[in-house]
Image: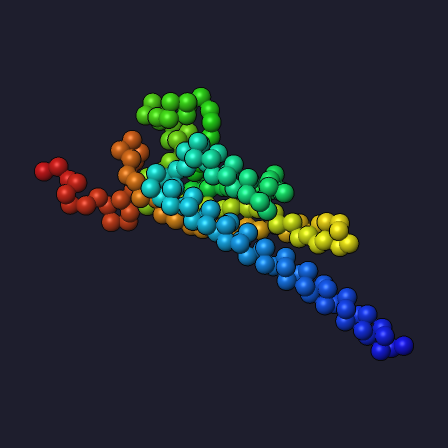
Length: 176
């Protein structure tokens, strides 16, 4: 009798191992897509010092439309924060309708900071761990996935003050 129970237990464990293996086979492309999206967003932010709203919406819609991501589309999020906590993604509002920020007096309202600042890009998604048993699809768990990437912004804006660092301005900046 114990031999029969051991055989049943081994069959159950083998089936569970196969289900986990097939889920992991779908998980790795899912996770690579999260990493690729974070890298793509960080490169866009490093050249412009912020992410324009239309590009943000395009990337977010494209990611939510992908095969595994569309099952839990509400769990897909893209965030970008400057080192001071300011949001690096342009939000749709009264100041961003024209796409220009020259007339804003408060630097906090602008989505960009001066060159040299750090921006952390975070991409969040939810992976549905699924099993198909007897023809029925069962979601065993929703696994939240987060990937962070930090980049340095490289564009110099003349409308923002520039911090020269601990050594003051360069010699060429003095008027003689």
